[in-house]
Amino acid sequence: MSRILKWEFRGLFKSGEFVFTFILMLLIGASYIGIAMSDGVKSGFDGFIGASNFVTSSLYLAGSVFAGIFFTSAFQERMIQSAVMAGNSRFRIVISKCIGYYSALLIFILCPILTATLTMTGILGVGTITTGNII
Image (cartoon, rainbow, N blue to C red):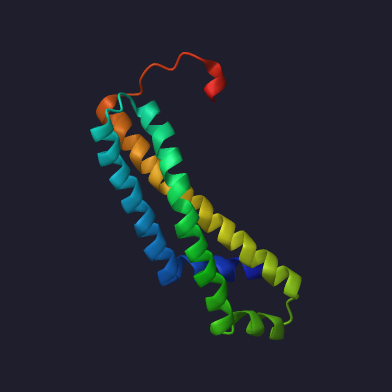
């Protein structure tokens, strides 16, 4: 299984689809900074909450398009067939594809949120966090 995962991650991070979607999510995070500043966000924590909501709505489109390209390219380039012919089970191949996809989604979620939050925290400060239940 580890060989399949190494192969999957190497192909994932070198693919043009991943790089394009990563840059798109970075631009979404950067665009939220401008939106938040014009809306009058007063602290980095408020920016974090707003960025989380903003990214969630845009990830529906970007994540579904990436999923379609990610899984169909594996069939078009005959990667799955060559992995089966190498002696790997189909279940392990599908699990490795899903792990690779969910890892990419995690990166796509964290990238714009961290970009917007760290930038707004650096500019505006953390703000007052008074309750412990927000964590």
